[in-house]
Amino acid sequence: MPLLSNKSRHTRLGFAILLRFFAGMGRFPRFKGEVPGAVVAHLAKQVGVPADEYLRYDWRGRTIKYHRPEVGRLHRGGRVDARRRSPATRKNVGP
Image 1 (cartoon, helix red, strand yellow):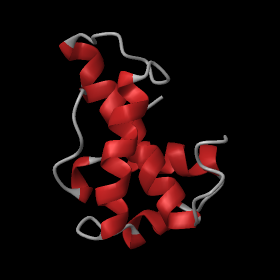
Image 2 (cartoon, rainbow, N blue to C red; image 1 turned 135 degrees about the vertical axis):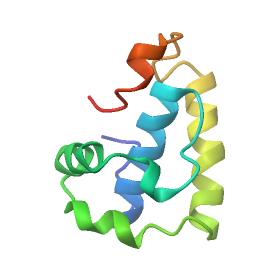
Image 3 (cartoon, rainbow, N blue to C red; image 1 turned 180 degrees about the vertical axis):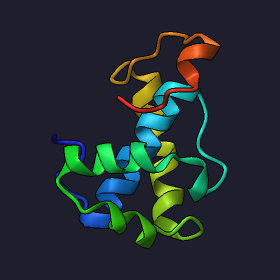
Image 4 (tube, rainbow, N blue to C red; image 1 turned 30 degrees about the vertical axis):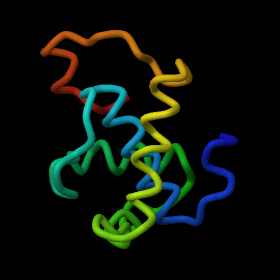
């Protein structure tokens, strides 16, 4: 995953969660707990990071302030599934 190769463990997982949530919901999570634990566990497994690393991802620091525009650019650039999703699909942010 070239998008994640330059990121450390917790930032890699946090970025993957933002990317997947944004692709599914069309917005960023409002708070850390909005992302279901099953989604965190699944994405952690995909990126090879323990799920508890998500707790270290800072929702107020400069990293997330950098990640949000990066995810937005990727989404607008067509590298993320940009199709509109139905409300039923939006409930399932996971895989």
